[in-house]
Amino acid sequence: MVVVECVTHQSWAITHTVALCVLQDTAVMDLFMEEPFATSPEEKTFHDITTQGDFWQWARGPLLSGLYVAGQRHIDTARRGTHG
Image (cartoon, rainbow, N blue to C red):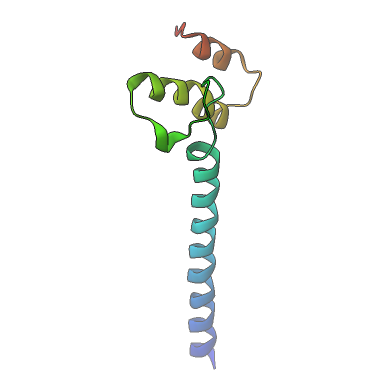
């Protein structure tokens, strides 16, 4: 009885961990890779990056917005390109 219970618990823990990883992966994809560039005239996402300029537009837009809470002083400085 104890062996069965341990195996069942381990199976649940693995399933729970995998499900959590899938949820986190989906959240990261939505937050960073599917978010359109705010500074782009045509709607682009991470998958549409073809130039260095596209990368920096993405990095200063969806990446910074996803990593930092809006309104923090350092995010505004980074968006202007005046890194300290």
